[in-house]
Amino acid sequence: MKAKKILIEFMVLCQTISLFFAFTATAAEPLTLWVHPYLPATELIKRFSPLADYLSQKCGQAIVVKVSESYKSHIERVGEERMDLAYLGPASYVKIFNTYGEKTLLARLEVNGSPFFYGMIITRHDSSINTLTDLKGKTFAFGDPNSTMSHLVPLHMLQEAGITIDTFNKTAFLGSHNDVALGVLGGYYDAGGVKEGVYYNYRERGLKLLDTSSPVSEHLFVARKDIPQSTIYILRQAMFQLKDEKILSSIKSSVTGLVPVKNEDYEYLFSVMRQLNSLSAE
Image (cartoon, rainbow, N blue to C red):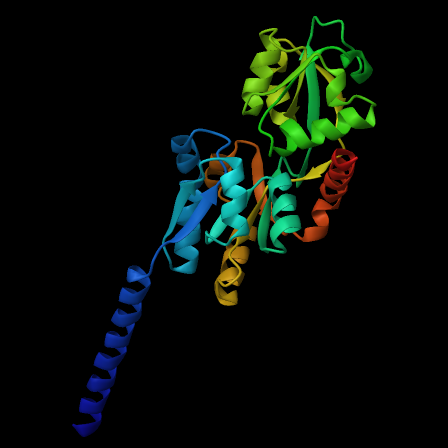
């Protein structure tokens, strides 16, 4: 009888401990996953919530999606560690690394089977512009000043071709890749810089490709430095093992996976930004 009583007390104790840890996990502050505002906030929350829910289940802690007010505020938020997790464009990551130092890397996108993507300089299909050198004296549209493929990479491509900002008749920042494509299609600008997916989306409506960049490592996820290593390991493994097409395609229709990432994957972009900084300092 005494042994049975001890066993019952032990089982009650185990249940109490289990309930305590379950309550603690439930009561813990949710982790935040911050996204830069490349689309309206409601759309981004909708796109990234399936991934957040999946990672929540894997790490046992709620994860909520939040959207930064601007590219600039997103860079500052991540750089100053005022987030738990974050989704970044490649140029934003390089700027953060150069300004604030190394971050904890989680994974990068794989799109159509590749962790690289391209920037493209576009014009209208009926334009007399056929090469980058034909852009001298023309008008040119960029997206956001902190955007990889709608500003920094096309700017580097232009400079490599001997085209500087002061050789244009007019330049403007329109805010997004889609707005650049529409601005060119509408005849408001002679040419512009966009990522490859936007060019392909609008190509049939009348866009012409002038030039393509070197491959750039894809968008990535990072984490706050003081998140426990055990949680980082769980998050990484969950990302690498993610095969659910609904979750992946929710981020972007062409996403096929989340793959390992290291700082060296962005060496081309580090080089691009060093050259641009060198030129601006002259």
